[in-house]
Structure formats: C-alpha cells, structure tokens
Amino acid sequence: MAIIGAHGKVAQQLMRLLYDDGDDFIGVVRNEDHADDIYRFGGEGVLLDIEQAEPDALARAIHGADAVVFAAGAGPNSGPARKATVDYGGSVKSQQAAVAAGVRRFIQVSARGTDDPVAPGSDESWTAYVAAKRDADAELRRSTLEWTIVRPGTLTLDDGTGFVEAAPRVEPGTIAREDVARVVIATLREPTSIHTQFEVVAGSTPIEEAIASVATTARLG
Ligand SMILES: NC(=O)c1ccc[n+]([C@@H]2O[C@H](COP(=O)([O-])OP(=O)(O)OC[C@H]3O[C@@H](n4cnc5c(N)ncnc54)[C@H](OP(=O)(O)O)[C@@H]3O)[C@@H](O)[C@H]2O)c1
Image 1 (tube, helix red, strand yellow):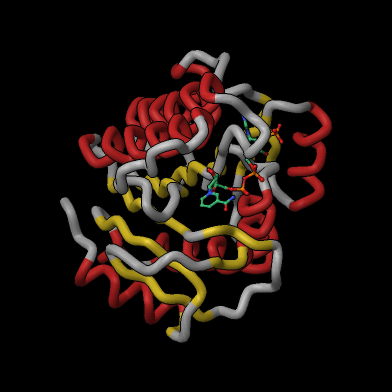
Image 2 (cartoon, protein in one colour):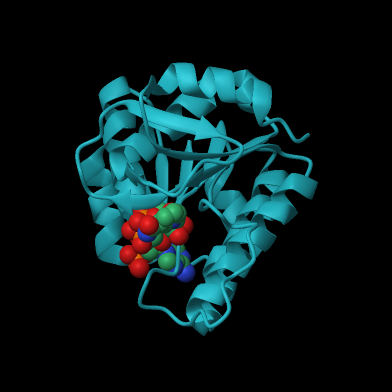
C-alpha cells in the first residue's frame, strides 16, 4: 500500500495497524525526519512534496503498490491556497499518479458534509477546504480507478472503539482517528466497497459489518 501524507495522525494509526497485520507499505512524506519515522513504523519512507512533485515522480514512487490511500491534508492552520494545492491538487495528482502507475485501488480520506452548501459567513479557509474536498472527490468519482471515498466526521485522538455508523449521509458526530484507520483497512478488504462513498462517525456497528453493509447503500459507480 502507498500512503500519501503518511506522517499525518490518521496515517500513523493506519501504519501501526498495517504493521501489526504484517502488511507492507510505503509512506509519502515531505520532511526528511518524517521519512525516518516511516521506517520506524515498519514501512518505507518516500520523500516527496505532493504540492511540488511532478505526477510522474509520484507515479514512480507508488509503482508496485496494491492500493493508494490519500490521507494528506493542508491542516487547520493553513489558508485557502494550500487547501487548493494539498486537499484538492495533492489528491488529484495522486489519482493521476495511481492511473499512470497502474495502481487501480484508491481510498480517499475526505470529510463528512463536503457536498453541503457552506454556511453564509464561514471563513474563507473553511470555504476553500470544503470546496477542495468536494472537488477532489468529484475528480476521483470521474476517474477510471477502483475508488472508495471515506468521509469521516470530526476526528479525535481518542482510542478507537471498533464500532461506527457508516451510511451515505450520517448526522454530525465525531470519530477516533484509530477507527478511521480501521475503516480504511476494512474498506480495502471489502471488494464491494469499490465505487462507494460514505460518511462515518462513531456508532454501534462493528466496523467490518458496517463497511460490508454500507457497500449496498452507498454505491455511486
Ligand atoms: N480534523 C478533522 O476533524 C477532519 C474531519 C474529517 C476529515 N479530515 C481529513 O482527514 C485527513 C486526515 O486527517 P489528519 O488529522 O490525519 O491530518 P494531519 O494529521 O493534518 O496530516 C496531514 C498530513 O498531510 C501532510 N502533507 C501536507 N502537505 C503535504 C505535502 N505538500 N506533501 C506531502 N504531505 C503533505 C502533512 O505533512 P506535514 O506533517 O509535513 O505537514 C501531514 O502529515 C485530512 O485530509 C483531513 O482534512 C479531518
């Protein structure tokens, strides 16, 4: 697996779970110290800034992976420009790289409510963030990839519970990043989740069961 934005907080949970399961992964990061951390997590660190890199370079980096997980984000302290270059541009570049590298499976970590109109008076960074996620998801749905779009609610650093609510639309809520990582793994293992897009928050259904059943209601492709 190739994880884009591998030093992020969801990605670190994902790497921990993959290592425990004995799965191989590469982690794309933009900071040399972070690349060393990926080796400490048990994977292979690839130093590459997704805002600066040519798609070909990213394609070479992920070549041979069985799937791409886009878990990068410009982060809460960034302005509109980086929402466009990371959350939108970085995802689209990763999609293009996956196509070029022949990596068909692609999981996008998006966000709940991304297709809703932004409330009047919202600040410009939030507006740009929602637009970036919405437009990146739309590009992915139009792609030839075997995509799944995971749209979590507000992320926490709590321990995961292993239980979620997943559906095309769910009410606002929180979810532990550890559970988002488990959802990503369950999604990768559930072929019927290909061409589905769903929201996910903490809930009462075991994750594997939730992902198997959401595949019947959230199919878009
Ligand atoms: N916060 C929420 O409540 C919430 C809710 C729903 C969805 N989400 C989305 O869920 C995803 C994962 O969230 P998270 O909390 O794990 O994010 P995070 O901890 O902020 O991690 C994002 C990662 O993206 C990396 N990144 C940024 N620009 C990059 C670039 N140019 N090249 C390579 N990597 C780059 C960052 O690297 P550096 O460490 O070098 O900056 C960081 O490690 C994000 O897309 C986020 O928008 C968040």
